[in-house]
Image 1 (cartoon, rainbow, N blue to C red):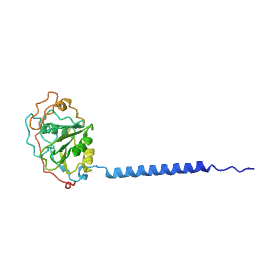
Image 2: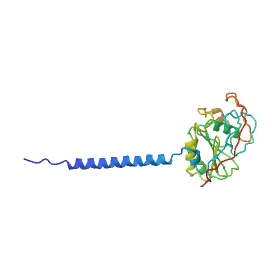
Image 3: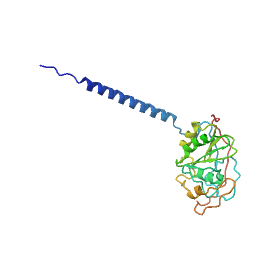
Image 4: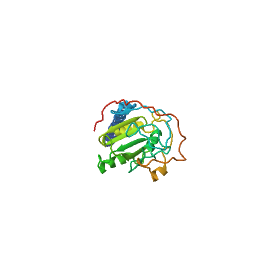
Length: 229
């Protein structure tokens, strides 16, 4: 009687597959746990974020606003909102229009064109371009190279590689807990076609939202940490 030989090749292949599968699953679990541990659940978990207190329902105006913060983070604003559908502007857009985009849940990234190289501006453009809820524009005279704004919140950073930029974007874009008008549109093709600049006030838009009546309420900033490169 001839003894049957064990299929050692198949057994070895099965062991290799099993070990590989276990390694893949282990890696996936580790990455998921790491992502969960790093997930931002409140604004104060992002070091350096400043918080303000502009009430919901700000007035619509068609004249320039002397904002307390620069760039502004809330308050009266133009009825015509700046398009925030992942829009990269090459001009300093009307600040009153940008504030209206913040009211709709947008995150506005402003940068000092004198402080960043074209390559660095390109890094920011890649973060913004085509990503719903974001807009990017130059803003001369910033106190830091880069400033991120959402309604009632602001973060300034020195480097385009600062990981807090993506943390801020991920947490605040269309966040229903911090957005005065969740679900409002970020689309405004007419604005993209001919964006008013900060030096030229935007005319009122007939298709914009109805005017609000609440006057601005501003509180001092509470900083959870200082900006780092």
